[in-house]
Image (spheres, rainbow, N blue to C red):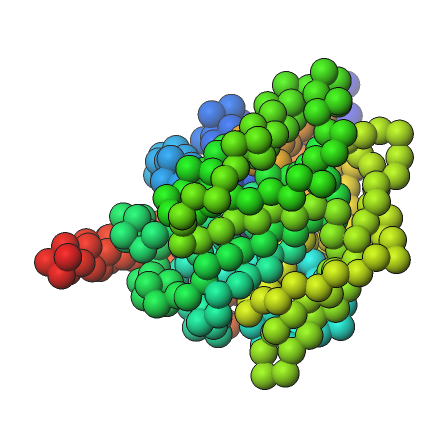
Length: 452
């Protein structure tokens, strides 16, 4: 007996070709490159695209590290190896929020990682902050490191006295660069326009002013040692800032203890030896007002006292005592903050970071680096965070089925960019830029050598 059925016969074809993971990283700084480095080692033939709004890579390593710290920039060699991996693609001159949106990236990629860093400075929010020659440290760093929009920074170095608000490594970097003898700066990769300006600088004294005390200083021992060894420059401490500090030495953890011991040693050994320049760390002071007519002339400071049982985390409290110091340049270096590059990024504007839970923003969307943590730690800290986020992405690929369908990747995004006539800068394009920069730097070096 035979049976007929009214149901059609359906032929199913199942593909055995695995889906290639398409991963988009927004930001070509340390966080982005470290994450890419980890992922490309763990995944079989992924497609990792690193988007960068600038035409050049490396972010903070290129534009944030002081020019006299070439050892820190050595990590660029590691990032270059990652960029040259056939499964990694650098895509410069693409701006999230204007050239491409987060939603478009989510549609084109299985994973979107936000690592575009912290690009704005926190403000002092005091009267006089907008007077001429009150400048953010971030802009000065960009000026001597070659960020395009800071090239023409209007900075006047004709005065003798500088007040820097903030006592982190960026603040001390700016102080060191401005006080370093010009013949030593010529040996670094500082920009030519900054070198030319500093060569005519009249700056003699820089005050590094912080709200709290020596036990809460944010600069590292390495940065302080460099200042103490700076040629033709005296470091001058205020003895009253260190009253009772030595009593806490036995309770301090090793890094803080060594830094505090170095400050106390320097205080004990300080003298009035003949030097042309002075570096003055000043503690327990908050900026209240900046005074000046055509440009800054004076800053009014409030004297603080520290309150709280935890000695390392005491809070500063303003007293009624006021002081003022004369200055010709004010530098604000009280921290960085991130921006909301795209309207669909959940953002905490008060803290200046992306909202996330353990680095996860949404399904398939993650954050790493300062954009998620705030501007804390050094490059090694960023590496640890990036590796952890990479492991989280790998775990979610298995547990959350992120690779359940094919995605268009960059082939989909390039169509959008072409409609806007965006000129995408490839890794090969960057190498040409780099070769040109090195060639020009060599010419300038040879010219300086002939003149000297």
